Length: 210
Image (cartoon, rainbow, N blue to C red; front, top):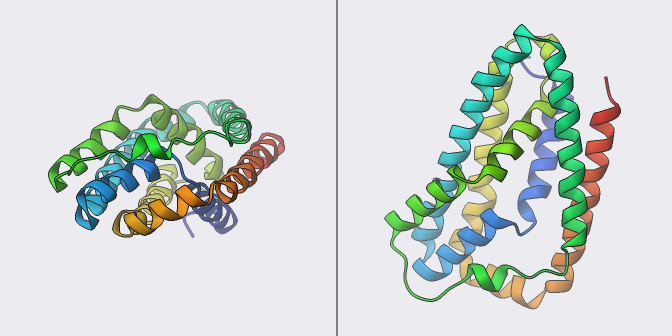
């Protein structure tokens, strides 16, 4: 198998947990769906997924070559990425009382084309997304298996598939999801605390492994 099955399973579970927690991407897709209907929600998801594919390709091309040329670079990136995951976890716990949903949902219609381009450009030009991709994906790469670029490709494919599965569903069911989130802030906060704890724990584990 070209990728470590344990790391792949861990990546899938962690990504699902991260995606079901209302974050910038989900809130953006939710807003597009509520303003432009299910089609706009799906196209907004497609725009976000397209930008993620670009991020993954850039990370795979640059980091795969770097890891092969300078093996110690993998350790440096892994530790830096683990520190970033811990930071994200702490921020999620600290900001659990914030309510960005209302800001994401505006008034007025939105065309499918605008939804796609907005999702593409917003995520593509987001430095936090670039940093997250570079920090997150290498945590689930095992250089000893070789074909680092293929491992990146597999993880990227899983990431994009889950993006469509989770945020795409939110876009289609934007009205119901929006109402659910607005009226269940306590549940959302508990999810954010759990997700923050997961990120912190994962960061510590990955920093101490290998």
